[in-house]
Image (cartoon, rainbow, N blue to C red; front, side, top):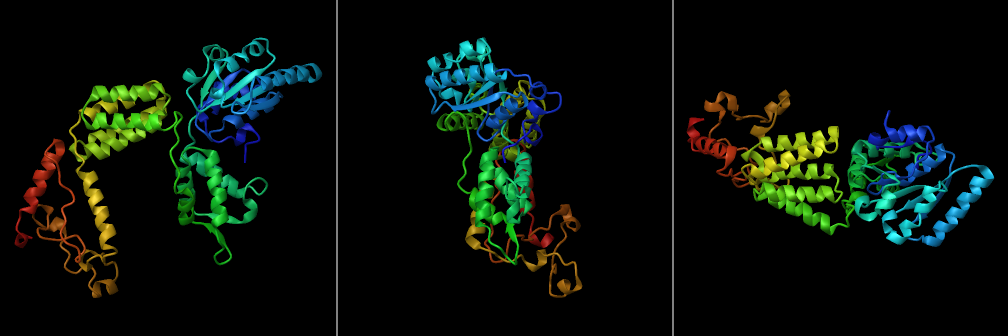
Length: 423
């Protein structure tokens, strides 16, 4: 399913959309050395191939894991031969360029200077740290972003429909929820998404003559997937943990420091924005509901404005969250409620709480005895019970005495103190 032309390329609209410089240079066949920086499965190799194709350039692909100086020299000789025989330029693509040491990277420089090679490097690591400055100064860096769920879903649908290169010949249908599950689990990685789709297709069994990819099968192949990060895992999770704890601990200075450390290290700001929104609902909650709205605004600001304005919006949200009153009451309450759901199983909804849209349902007791809260004093049916009848009473939500939850707690206490016979 690798795109054969630029029009088939999925994602990276910030680089390849109408009027974008990279798209214009590719369309014009103008070669220039560049470094493609982004997570796996975002199209780095594909983009390099398309650049060579549209420029009528000879394409040589090497991997820094396997190649050495000898391979580079061989590529140079091939480039010179192609130029002399066919008059065509050569594009040398080096995957995982960060794996080359300084001496190996230095090898490219003379051939970039004299035009023997056009260099395209691909890396998942921050080029500022992993690529020598001399090479950086001769190659423009383009940042590729993880593919969106919408992009991945479109890619999966194309693979299902394509009988030449995809799964179109298997007569396989897929429910929207199943594709959504795979797209989310792929975490921005097109290669991972297609691999999971292929695996899921092998697990689908015909039912009634039709083969349908269901959410259950998709969840099975998606289980065990992990988030990606370009600095090796441990350092990233340690830093996001420190950021979260600084916000929870009401330390705006510590929170800002760890935010800037992660941005400087090459972390995707959109991932940080998602985690900041999580902090708002987990550690602030209803003590200050504005915190969640502000975190979502910051997330959207980065999507619309990018760097650096969007990063400043995320920093504003982080500082606000650190200074806001804290409450994990809803977080704790949901955990306790989920535990009860697991413990008590599928308890019946009491008849009085069931809707009764038909006469039959009314005749068998649906809705009988229900007290419409708006008809009660203060819109509160004192003494009414909304849990299953076979379950003990519960108080999951216990507001803290901070921020807005202080008033919420007082209001709940007043309502719960009312005698049931006043209903």
